[in-house]
Length: 191
Image 1 (cartoon, rainbow, N blue to C red):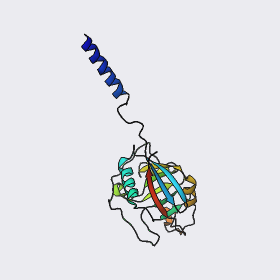
Image 2 (spheres, rainbow, N blue to C red; image 1 turned 135 degrees about the vertical axis):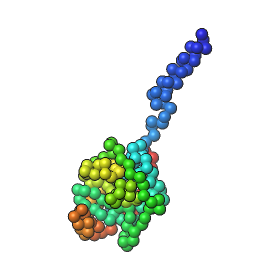
Image 3 (tube, rainbow, N blue to C red; image 1 turned 180 degrees about the horizontal axis):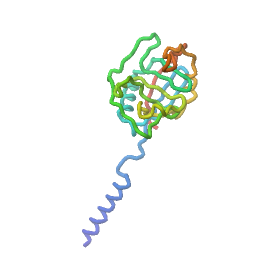
Image 4 (cartoon, one colour; image 1 turned 180 degrees about the vertical axis):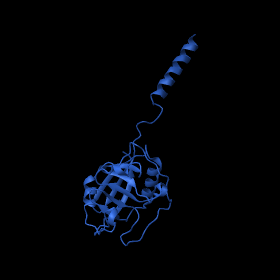
């Protein structure tokens, strides 16, 4: 009788622990991307819990120093700022990892300050280019992979978006800034 009681108590305790999630590390937080630009610092929470493929790709590129020295090559006030391909001299840089599979999450939307992957016509064509929303852009939800959000430095995003540009993107909007806005580095930190 004693053995059965101990066994039942042990099973009950195990069910309680697993059912309450105590065996999982629920305290683990998404990491931060610290984007140091020539206009200031932008701190972004990455949605590793919602878009693991996209965040892993971005983190890998950032840790490799891929983005260091690249410019924001497209800006538009009340729309977005885009980077991840061009150096100040106009030369282009391609991701050594190629393209990634498209993913999205209904909770990861293009709110003000969202960071998202730029891509071509094919949903699976994103590689290294990203953009940060200057104002909510919900028309992009489900079409682009919003993989994080600015938690500090939204005023830097606004300043970059408001930079005079050459209008080179015509009908789709925005252009290359008339002054180079450089990504000095992107570092990844835990919260």
